[in-house]
Amino acid sequence: MITCYKCGETKPLSEFVPSAPLWPERNHWCRPCDRARVRLVRHGMTVEQRNEIAIAQGGCRICGHPEPSAKGWVVDHDHECCPGGKSCPKCRRGIICQWCNTVLGNAFDRPEILRAAAAYLEADRTCDWHMPLACDPRICDGAERASSTYVRTHSLTERVVTSEIDLSVNNAREVSKASASLAATRTARYAAEPA
Image 1 (cartoon, rainbow, N blue to C red):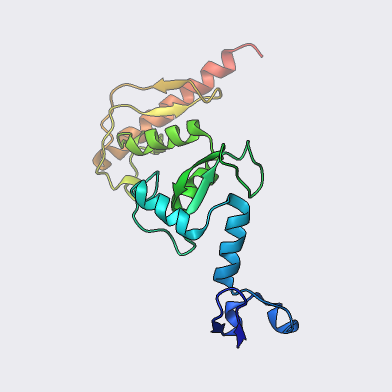
Image 2 (cartoon, one colour):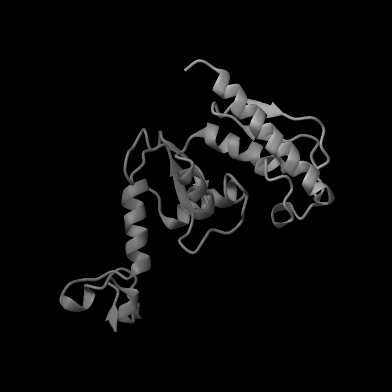
């Protein structure tokens, strides 16, 4: 057991950094006190100040979640202004939860990625994403139906649309024939193009 120099509580060794027992003569801070010290140095705010801001803005600035994660509220800041873990008053955007901070980090703080993700989530669900597999029951359970079969071409942007085909599981043979016919047509078309 070691006594924290900051809060004065006697805590088990697991509440301190691993090197604490090696130098018992030093003044050690427990993990929560040390985390608060680092946050103050990095962002100029105490844990209490972050909590006050979170309450004033109604929880997380992005999702509105009223409780922080186990690590507490996160100071969101523009990394182009202050690279690394520090921030200044000019680049601070708000107090957010750890989950939203992870989302922003995974999107590289780029709004266009987040907009594309939102559009993806809001899009209608069709069978088009797995074409030309033609509503294989292992993929969409035949519950969805599409009116056209889409096949990727070499340009990745052009779509070749076949005639109206019912893509239910009952018509798997017809779909298979149409896919083979479409593949043959595509092969012939690209073979005829000059190199």
